[in-house]
Length: 168
Image (cartoon, rainbow, N blue to C red):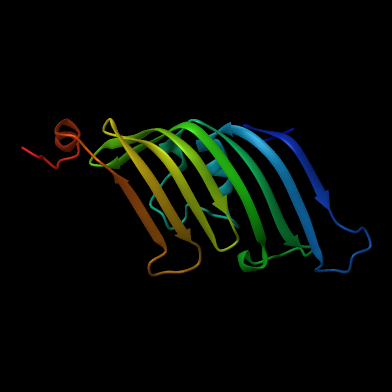
C-alpha cells in the first residue's frame, strides 16, 4: 500500500481486540521513497520530527529506506507525549540543500536513528566538494540546546571560497 506518495512494503498492527481502553496499539512498517515525502509524513503531528530544526522536508533530496514502529494508546484523543516511536532510516546519495552559505551537502550516505525523545543522524558526504562527516543529534520537547549539529572534515582553498571562508 501507500501513505501519500510513499510505498509501504510491509506493515502490521498489533493489538488485542478485547484490550481495555488505553492499552497500547503497535503500528510497524517498512517503506522506501523520496526523503522529502517520508520526512513530510514524519513531520506531521504527533511526531513532528523537524519541528524545532529549521529544516523543511523539501530540502532533502534522494531516496531513503525506513523501518518504523509507533505505539499509540487505544484512545480517541492522545497527546504527543503518550506516543512511543522508534525507527531507522538509511540513505545513500542524499542531498540537503543550502546547509551553509548556500552550499549543499551532497552524496550523503548514512543512517538516522529515531526514538520517542530524539533522533540522531550519522553520515558521510561532501560539502563544497570536500569530504565531511555529519553528526546531528536532535532532542524533542526540549527548548534549549535541542539541536547539536557537527560537521567535520578538511576543505581546500576552492571550497573555502565557496563557503565564504577564504584561505588566501
